Length: 71
Image (cartoon, rainbow, N blue to C red; front, side, top):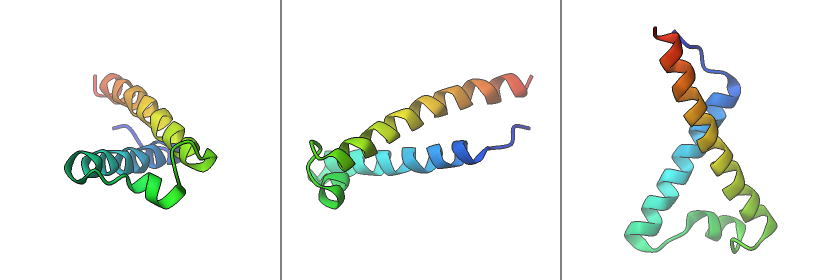
């Protein structure tokens, strides 16, 4: 069984935040990240979006790691 590292757990949390944000945008046209951290052009908002994207890449790699450890 694969044991999650702290980076994997953090990535999972960021992916959940990103998914909730996209759901809010789709349903209510409400961007939670924009409201909390300012416009996407704001440096902090852009960093948040970059971190969520990197977390998504980490989750793709986690998928392959866990697939290989199950064999």
